[in-house]
Length: 430
Image (tube, rainbow, N blue to C red; front, side, top):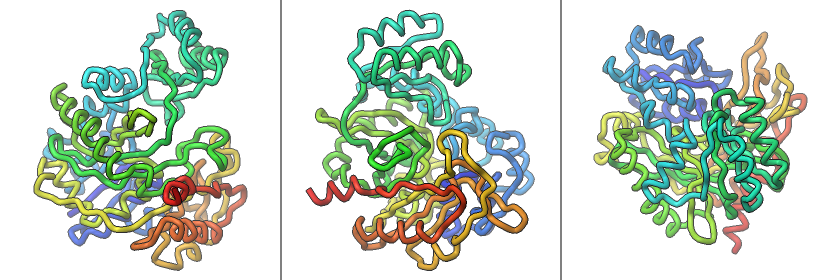
């Protein structure tokens, strides 16, 4: 089997790493990949959103399966272009990917199918005055979300009315997210603990993966600015067997059935951001793909051939495939560049990569790296995801292993949080 992984981040490196373990995979490619994927696959100089370029490569190289990592090519319809050509591709169609591509669609969808989520109101750009009046009368804090994709920065928690008015002006007036902010959602602020739940769906059947917990804030103790994710661990103890059963019955099943009823059959990975509130689990957001850095801790816990599983998803055969999970824990600590999530440094030489992976328990997934004059250097805000996998080990030991790997790596301006996984430990100690 020849496989192409589309994307260039830590999620795509983790996908390549897991797919490489399949005995059926004979050739593996990444487009465009990064310095880390080069050791597993052949990097192809085609950008993730160059759909026609990807199509040309897949057809000329007779690729058997294309696995799409990021959301942009999915929301732009890469699946709709590949499938009529008889090509197998893992991910939802453009209509199905709108569950992430439009916050307005997803909120209205949840309302229609009685899927628990935060109370909300929708405003278009010509309703800006109404939006300002609404936040003036809303309980605080509230959340203002851009309708479209905004690189993970389109949801803002507003502590005051002035904060909310400022965000509305940035989105609708200054158009900092372009057309993505021409419609906004204002919703109630949910209190509780967040978790990420993943379902592999063939449109009718589904398999749940290990629940994970991401760490969005830049600083320890969930302080500071939001980021794309500073680390993750799985399984997340907050998602008990009882809660997972509740999420399955009240969220996952209605979502997959509802999407099919809407003519948006969902095939691929459905990511559900959950808030565990005092009144039960509620949906914070949907994504139409694996999360990053959650993929780095969820994929290693799959006990099976990922290539086979993905093919079953693509061809509606998931009911014939039992997806097993390892009795293990996984922890990923992101090492970021100085200045991230604002303007950050790049081009910094990275030291200690081999030393950090001196045991089989640690894998370093590259998020923002490139080769330069024979060296691996930083090329993004999030640079590396140091991931420890504890087969048969508890979370505490796996956290220690991850940070042991982190301490082996240095580059100018390297920064990481020191408390990844601590929420999980608190749950286990209760």
